Length: 191
Image (cartoon, rainbow, N blue to C red; front, top):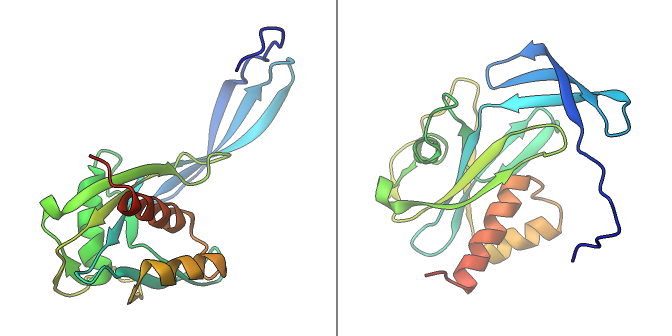
């Protein structure tokens, strides 16, 4: 409920954006922001072209997960299969479909890959949007990893995955959001 006696400050206004670095999947900017009180501050901004992830569900209900080394954390992580869009205009459904087979070695026809949710990974300084899908009726093929990818694939029950989340073995945000949403939809299906 909004209190009519409280005035909210105006939002900050961007007055300049300077590109500091351009990589293959992201660009780093320094934004000069005018604050509601008139002061200016520099904000970091990371522009990402977007990504997709997929929850691959096997016939027995177990979920395929990928284990790979993540340089930013200097450790291996257990995650949902995912990848960056090839271009900002690529449909995320196509990316999820592609990453499923590339990373896990399992295929699903496009009608068996359905949208689950959209999430933003780090809203304080990055616009990376990840669309998460669910893939069912999986068919075993083979992995098609990129030259710099070394990925192992494992299958777990939801209960095992939740235990790993609580034990801080799974720390990846898209994975946690995807699994929690998937579990909620299973427990309370939507029409």
